[in-house]
Length: 135
Image (cartoon, rainbow, N blue to C red; front, side, top):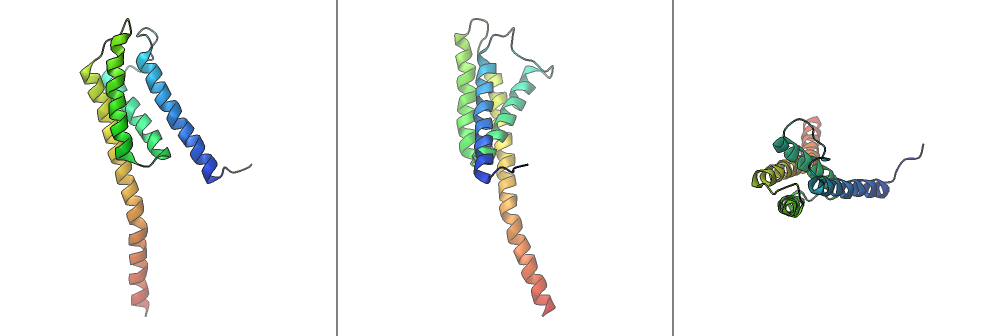
């Protein structure tokens, strides 16, 4: 089986990020009768949906706070645009739940990125320390 190159894998992840944003837009703008529901409650659905989208997009573009700023704006815009649909209405709490999901995901991704950067440095220091004790 052929392995994907790093560039090819990144393209697929970016395509997945764009698709996730597209699904977010579609699920926000379709009619209430056909909107998929999980049974968790709309607040948790907003939080988890935006959390998942932010996580996927951060895999493709590892700039969590830039992505968070953009997706918080998207959450507000999508809620506002629901005023244009006949059977939906904008809800500030829904926008805040979505923004909360974005911010939590972005913070977790930022912590993960910092931990990965720090770990090799600590490993090098540990290796240096063990080399000096051998001498």
